Length: 120
Image 1 (cartoon, helix red, strand yellow):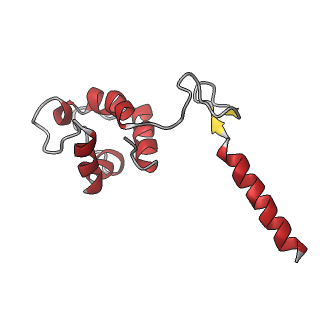
Image 2 (tube, helix red, strand yellow):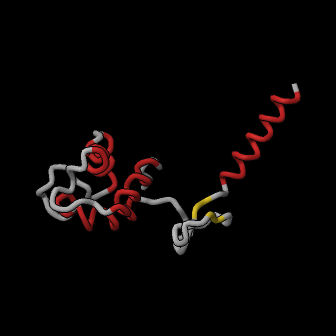
């Protein structure tokens, strides 16, 4: 009876400790303060992804009507995510953007944002 209780207690302690454990993106070292580098947060939002990825590398879908899928607004981008076009074309098939590939940091940011549920 004591062993399952000990395992449960240790699991709870490690889970709670992990809630405040974040990686410092500037040095690559763990940061127990809950911040990462100069941004103070690890959560990426639509505005971050739009600026880092969509505006720089997906101009057909942001500033013109050439792209059939719009990435201009959060709602339009959610439609692309719902239909699985965004993840499939950019991260799996890597067919988008066609002119130049996304950088490793753009891919990582987009993956992180999508994995977090693509917050607004």
